[in-house]
Each structure stands twice: as structure tokens, then as C-alpha cells.
Image (cartoon, rainbow, N blue to C red; front, side, top):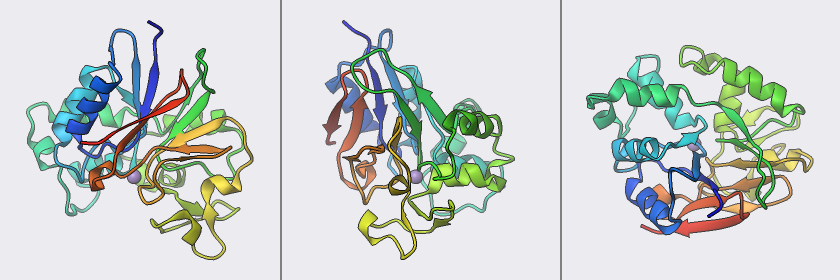
Length: 241
Ligand SMILES: [Mn+2]
């Protein structure tokens, strides 16, 4: 069988749905590749089992805002809020599991020889000012260390944006895309179609695809389906827990 690369939307500790997805697609770690579009952790019921399952199948991924929170709250750089990561913090392998999150890139290029398009993957989105994504990726990924994240406008943008303006200023907003505050638009609406950008982070928008972007966060942790994209066959798989 041909090897397949999958990108899965926000897991947020939904280990049961991840397990169901892997079974549904008959995922073979020796042959296939799993990418998480960020926010593997927190909010949901089982962050540790999610991370272990993802790790055990050789999972890759990009940094989400909940990874940044989980790492920075652990190290005391961010005040602890209501979260569901205590079991991770207390786990005997906590440092190793957190280390996997700390090593995640912010923006990654996924070239393919399959039938689908090449793609970039990022948790939130990319700025209209970022015309050379390879250069941005080099810059963002080199700076990916939790000492620096909270002070990095680029990392904050890539992991948090939903609506922004043409100058790349973000606005705090989490509702449907058509309701972006005046003067702001969904980040993908401010970019010309180029290489497909695959992202998560926008549960209220759900799964969508246009000429610029493919959204994979369908709110699994809120009772929606878990959505994955098979790049090599250019198709969407959804499972419900
Ligand atoms: Mn997020």
C-alpha cells in the first residue's frame, strides 16, 4: 500500500477520538505519517493518553497556543488558569512529554509526491505580510523555545490568529468568520491563493476549504467531529467519538 500523510485538527486531549481515527484510516506507523495541527493538549479529558498515542505512532505536528500555555504554565512563565493538564504535569514522563511539545515547529512545509497539493501547516494562520513562508518558517522555528514564545509577535500570530487586518494586526475574536470586527477579516481572506495552508484553532468556523486555506478544527473537544486530511489522496476523514 502507498504511504499516506494525514494532518489532524485540534485534539485537545481527545484520545478516544484520535484512537478511533487511527483505526478508521488503518494507520500504520511503519508506513504512514501523522501531523497534528497544534492544540493536542488541554481542555479535553485526556491530554496524557493523547500525547502517548500520538508519540507512539511517531506523530509530528506544529505548536498551538495550548502547547505554549501548557509549557509556560509549567515553568511558571504564565499564570495558571483553569486547565486539564495537571495529570500531565504529575506524570512520571512529564519532562519527556513536555519536551516533545517544546520541540514542535511553528510553521512546517509538507511537500508531497501523492495526489494532493503541497501544503504548509500552522496552528492559527499566517500573516498577510508573510510573503516568503520559507523564510518565516526558518525565523519562527529557530526561535521556538518557551523562554521566548510569549515575547514573539510572530509565534503569537501564527498560533492565535483568526481575524486580522492587512497590516497583520490581530484582533481577539473567536466566533464565526463572517462576524469579524470591522476593519478585520479572516486571515486567509487577506492572502492570495498560493500553496495551501492547513490550520486548526478556529472551532466555530469548523472544517472548510477555499483557494488559500484548509481548516481542520471542527470542535472535537466541544462535541464536534475530529477532522483529518489525507494529503496523498486529498480527502477528508471525520470521526465522532
Ligand atoms: Mn488554538
